[in-house]
Image (cartoon, rainbow, N blue to C red; front, side):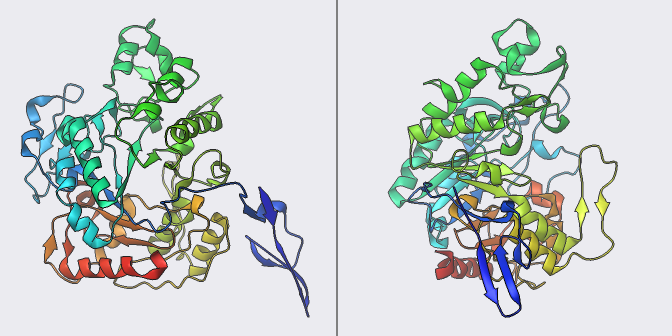
Length: 453
């Protein structure tokens, strides 16, 4: 790691230039620019344009695998609900159990459309077997959900991507599993089971540590050597033997991984996962979701990049919507009575990057686009679906003529283009949206810009 700063001798004195900006005092080392001299990013990554797909909302390519509501009950009181493509969901139905039966064959048959947009990489939200539509409540790390077409559907998609030179990234959840995962069910049924040590029970079997208190997402306890072996250490572990040749992995809630109470094993587990992935495929890209300052995880020994919400999405939300801070234990959010300034956005971006920012011009305009600098490759910034898209109510595409394809996030190493529909957060989470013909052409024009390559 090389630290550096600039000393400028001027007529009005000596000035230092660091990540903190231009100052006339001796700045602390923590604000130095940093260079990872021995870090090499995957060779295919620069110039990549990722298209994020939430599989249930993209396209139904094989109706034979559609979910039937009678297939299961969720903890004995809730069943999944399926809707015809384009129909609005009933607001009484739990968001996570609303399905439109999109699947992997649907993605495969739309690859020409994606290539036409200029996309050369896919980011798939979880495809592992699970009960919910989002699949973050994984019940089987070894197989693709049968309602997405099963293992063969992903193998077919992989082959089709290879023929087009398109890469793909899988979303995985090593921080927690689903309530109905066999590991957790064995642990609940038998306190002496080998899997019991994979979890933290405060009162067996119904009180246990979970992700942010969600009963459906029991947190994995990485103090267990056997859990570490099954997830990343063993030759048959999840990260070492996944058979579909993923080019990249996105680690869900990576900043919370292996952290609970006195157990603070995040660095050890992140390094172990990196070793497993890079030993299997040295050209794999590894990105972690992070809600705070991810700098410690971007030192070349953990993640290649992060979904840097605090580096882009959150400051932009404050600027569009007003400052609002929430936290566990707070009965109500902390808000500001005054608008968040453009200067505050710029300063936050500058402090959250590891390289100097180039000038960014912002305007509250009708077209929902944003341009921002990415810093070095290993601090790439992604923006995920979040409830703050309610800000998009006033930002509508110019035409109602539509293409029935799912959520779009185009990403390059230089510029992110974010596209959203004119709808509230509940519709955003429960229905696919449409790209108008004019909007489609606009996306293509943006992707073709040299700045994005």
